[in-house]
Length: 165
Image (cartoon, rainbow, N blue to C red; front, side, top):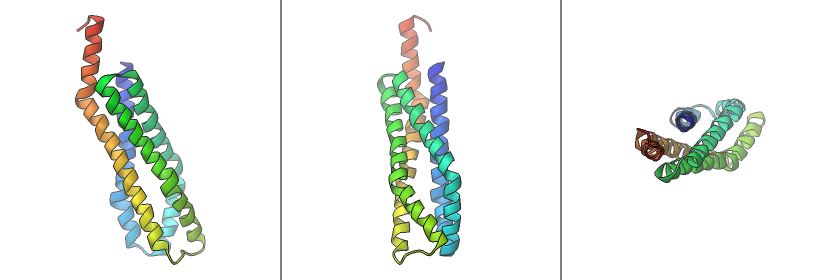
């Protein structure tokens, strides 16, 4: 039962993370690119204030729950959940060392003005955003694969070892 609860929490948190990043990539970024630069910078800076806590919590929950599931299981389930945890960690690292420094610059630009090379810097932010979105999505897919078939095999073999059906 404990494994199932951890698995459910890993699926939920990783699904929310992938969904939030996916929504941003599919909807926010194209909107950022469609509005005037000053509007984009102001909105981006405000959005990052709100995202700071919620996205860090989602990333942390995804990493910890996936890695906890890896510790509690074995075999293929351990491999899949461990890989999902590492992919969620990759999303965090990409965010922390790729997007966050650029977000700080965008916050300053919103108060002053963007530099001449702002378009290239914003393209880099979008590249990091796409990378973290893909790693979060891959983590979620691995946990779905595990939920559909992998964990069932592990729990069945545990029941067999315990002598129950």
